[in-house]
Amino acid sequence: MKLPFNIDLTNKVCVVTGGAGVLCAGFAKTIAACGASVAILDLNEEMAKKVADEIVADGGKAIGVKTNVLERESVEAARNTVLEAFGTCDILINGAGGNNPRGTTTKEYLFPEDVDGIEGITTFFDLDPKGVEFVFNLNFLGTLIPTQVFARDMAKKEGAIIINISSMNSFRPLTKIPAYSGAKAAVSNFTQWLAVHFSKVGIRVNAIAPGFFVTNQNQALLINPDGTYTERSQKILAHTPMNRFGTPEDLTGTLLWLCDNNASGFVNGVVVPVDGGFAAYSGV
Image (tube, rainbow, N blue to C red):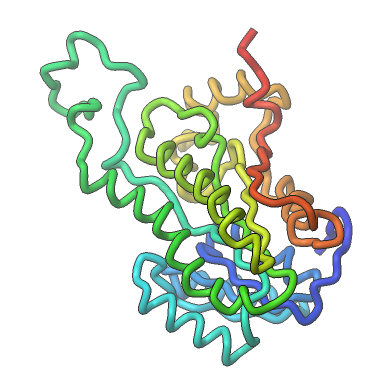
């Protein structure tokens, strides 16, 4: 695996939640290429083990572990598996998260004719509180619970690092996805809180906020069946000065920088945007 620069993570243990996803699988492979032993935690056991097998085939050390980040018992069991295989965690990447249609509106705006409801249209008034709750739990509690479980060991080590995965939605909410935007804002705020809280035990906590990347979860929203861009994609690209979607490799440099105590040892409590200039562009 070609890296933009090399850091030595030999003898380090990294845990990646949501590690079977497109972006987090990339994180796992990057960390493994630097010499760390990597545990890929994901609800999809088959895909987690597939990512681990790919790392091993490339000469790295990895295991895939079925884990539900919303169930403490499941995360505790995963910790025990990691402990037996590799030892205690040095780097925790909280990548588990996502959206749900029940926390999403059909239209970008509420129009007068929509107020009393139209069949087949989900307005703000129709949002399912349970769906919104699920999105908040998946993103926020899905970050909090693994941190509670793994950071107890990390607090007893030197140079431990936590990297949360936020989103550019946390800075400026996108239309139609209030639950996801709010949940990622909570992750960013929690990152800052944790950085302060863990500062006396030496754990650095930062976050990466990806802009627009095509993943398995959002592909249908961004790419039409014929391969062309959807209307939403066209809006995104029109407001992205670099005029493209990000790729997993675009996150590699930021990830490595945050994982290297020699390079970012005084960086703590920040949320780093990687968005191709989206947030900087006013639209004019």
